[in-house]
Image (cartoon, rainbow, N blue to C red; front, top):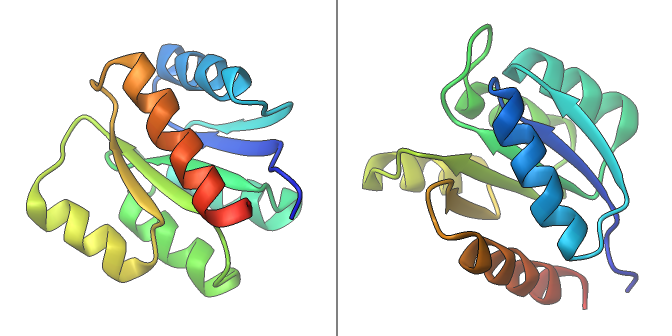
Length: 126
């Protein structure tokens, strides 16, 4: 199976979108879409169908869990990684129930984030 190269980054903080984009570039992603809230994220997912979605949990307009639910209803094979600074057991369990492939803490050291995403990609695409 081909390695993924398109990603959608959904986060209300521009500097975090830029940071996550730089990390994804390190592991081979080439094409990016960005959304600043969950509703924009759902709309962009439906129109662009990226290989991977990094989705913040806490955002205005539409929360990440709501957006995750809509994306998974639209495409049950979507690969969505929840990215949040909050990693309560309840939030992690809820995201997995809704279909997230992984839950990532944004305050994890960047080398670990890259390693975790690389492992996820190998597990899913290779």
